[in-house]
Each structure stands twice: as structure tokens, then as C-alpha cells.
Length: 123
Image (cartoon, rainbow, N blue to C red; front, side):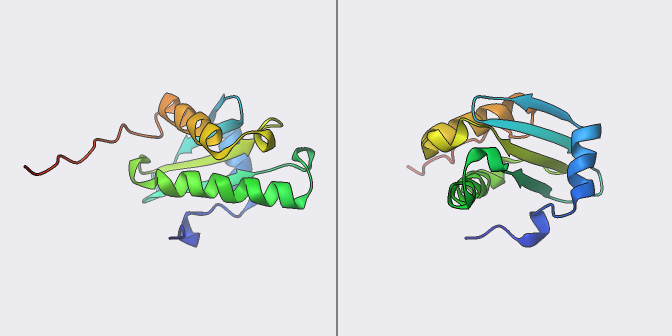
């Protein structure tokens, strides 16, 4: 299942506003910058993969992995936030599980990701 396009940040001014007005936290593979916006009903996200990471194939693979991490955890993301995930130079060397673990740790530390409770099993 794809993430709806209304959740994607597309304008460069939105990215700049998040960097200027928001707060950021860096991890091993990502930097997560975020700001709260009361006008946002769900959440909005952007992805940054610079040319230092490698060629287009590597950057596109990394963006697909980043989108999948966000899609998998979208139910736990706190509403009303805009955030940008910036891939660091180590990210192309990591496997998917390491990337996901780093992003989840950053999101929880920033308060973006609420702790998910597992549904109770019926007896």
C-alpha cells in the first residue's frame, strides 16, 4: 500500500521552514528534523538524499526504503507534525533493519512516534 501524495512535502519552502523553525536530532544513518503545524490534519514528511550518498540507483533505493519505514509506522506517528528525514553518508551501507531501527529510535526520542500497543488476543 502506498502513502497518499497529500502526506508528501514537495515545496522547498516547506523543507526550509522545518529546518529553520523545527528541531532536529541526528542518528547513525539519519537526521530527523520536525516541527508541529496545527494546520496539518495527519502528518507530512519529506525525504532528502544528497548526491554524496552515491549515484541515482543508490539514492532511489534509499528513498524507497525510507518511504517503507514511514509507511510501516504511519499508525504510530503523532498527528499534526511535519518532518524531514535526511539520509547521512553511512545510510547506503546499512541494511533495511538497521535503517528502520535508527529511524524508530530517532522518532521516539523526538516524540514523533508514540509507543504502539499490541492488540490483545482473544481467548
